[in-house]
Length: 186
Image (tube, rainbow, N blue to C red):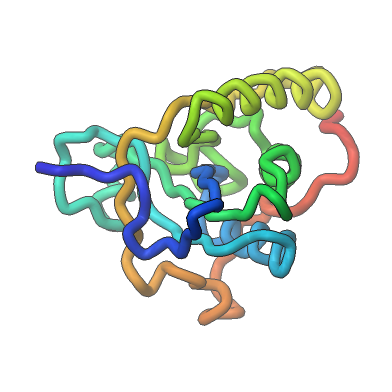
């Protein structure tokens, strides 16, 4: 079985870079990032399932929701680094969800909702670790950040109805923990 680390449907260019992020239900995560970076260097976002048990095939929403696959609901971003810096993307990441909760965001509980930065290069991995340490000190000094940082290993696109879900379904479920924090966690 062949696996991939990049969405086959993700729009990229010869100069774009990629990052894969998990911060709870992917509908709200996608919405926050589209809203924050539209027309600011963000090329595309796809939602999908990442870094689960690699021998599981035909990964889909129902299977991931069982909690038996270890796949995490994720977004994969394609961006132009000349216009949008990874530091800015990770700033929103660390502030748009609670990275101190294990396998949960708000009412959503399970391994598929864990906090993770899945990197596509060694340089991005080093930067993610550095920023995690900085946000630990400045934003979450009394709460341990549990965000997992590791290379992307496997990616499956989510079903088409999940792509831009909240754009297609404005009244759809949105995790209450998805908002941009403006002050450190007390």
